Amino acid sequence: MTVDEFLTEKAKKTERALAEHVEAWHDAPDILRDAVRYSLFAGGKRLRPALALGAAEIISGDDAVALPAACAIEMIHTYSLIHDDLPAMDNDDLRRGKPTLHKVHGEAIAILAGDALLTMAFDVLSQAKDLRVIQEVARAAGVGGMVGGQVLDLQSERKAISLDQLRHLHACKTGALIRVSVRCGALLAEANEEQFEALTRFGEHLGLAFQIADDILDVTGEEDLLGKPIGSDEAKQKSTYPALVGLDRARQLADEAANSAAEALSPFGPEADDFRALARFVVERHH
Image (cartoon, helix red, strand yellow):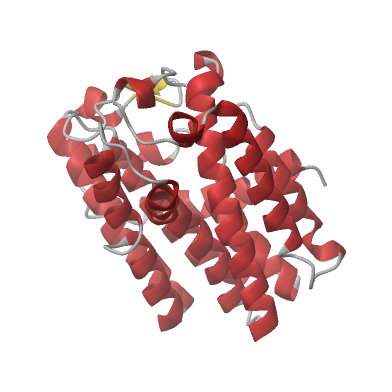
């Protein structure tokens, strides 16, 4: 199976389940449900759900047990993008080639749609009936994870920070949700300690590779492929790997992280080949 086939298969499973969850919000105002749908089904790789489902499949041969986690994490990821795009944050007009949600429905509805996705994500996650994954996701999305990382990102604008500080910033802002996706899939499939630790290391290295590649694409990518303007990080004077170490060194660091991700899978056999290929994909992609 190619990486594209793997991601497409997992995305289809996730999107069917997400559609069912949103349709079940019978008491939601129509405009709120429409706003959620606009962002939740706007496309994208569905990388995080694929990681949750793929990790479960590696361990047990069945990804169904991880579907609540896959959906919940994608809902949280989508809420974070909605809020990131707001004028008070990154002030972006385009997301995946379409107007951002606040440009379509206004800032107030965009904020509330994000709030709804975050809140209902935990309703979905509760269906896994495992308090461990609820705690894992809450911590990854919260003050020591994604939200905390967003604060560090804002504070680092127009400032010189060290490489270690940049790594920590991105480990929180981007890496935490990628890492927890893998961990939740492993937990729900009842991975043993060695398997769980190996997949955790994979998720950590993959998250780093993904973020460095994103930073590089903001410099070298094509707007039509990215679905948003390039150069926005530089324009906002954000702390990025190319800005800190240069493009060549950033590419080298991305390759090193991808290789470390693949090496972390050494306890597994062919069942982890999709993840090995994914490690290369995240640094070789064009969008």
